[in-house]
Amino acid sequence: MGRGRFITLEGGEGAGKSTQVRCLVEHLAQHGIKALATREVGGCAGAEDIRRLWLSQHEGFWDPLTEVLLIMAARREHLTKTVWPALEAGVWVISDRFVDSTRAYQGIGLGLGVERIDALYHQIAGDFWPDLTLVLDLPVDVGLQRMKARSGAAQDRYEQQDTAFHDVLRQAFLTLAAQEPQRIEVINAAEAQASVTHPIAARMDQLIESGMK
Image (tube, rainbow, N blue to C red):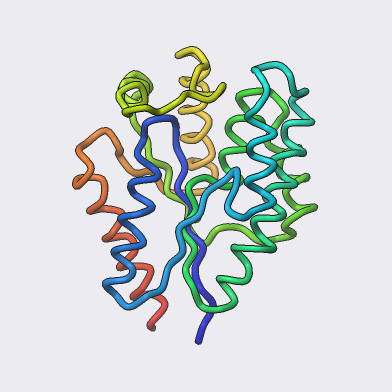
């Protein structure tokens, strides 16, 4: 049994990442591939504890670097307890957010710098990166409208940021994709769910086929 693949979904608020993660796991199951859905910040017991601590405080409570260190600690737990064991067992892992969110939100949005984020990431993960990252892209106003329409969804402090901040994040993800086209691909997420699911499923079929050659 070969190693599993690690696929991450990124993008701004309201892009439908959680929905597409579920659809992707179902699609892989139809091909006989066992897949695990997970998320960041979180994905295992210790990381979820850190998530609750991180989100329990108001905007500005955490120093930006402290915030990144919390996230990286949670990521290390997630990798060692969930991601790496699953991949070694031949399971594909599909994550709702990963390090590119930290690069975009804290590295670019909060001004810490992508290079600084990457250096910290290397300390906890070495040279490990996702096999493929899909950025679900849509206009900020559409994403925020979708987010507000989610029934009973409480907004965390990033979701509460103003439109200008979310514009910066959108451009950050697009910039990262332009810089690393071999790993990061952009998916138009402004369409209906099925229209977003189809190109993702087609991309997975390509990845599956390449692994069979």
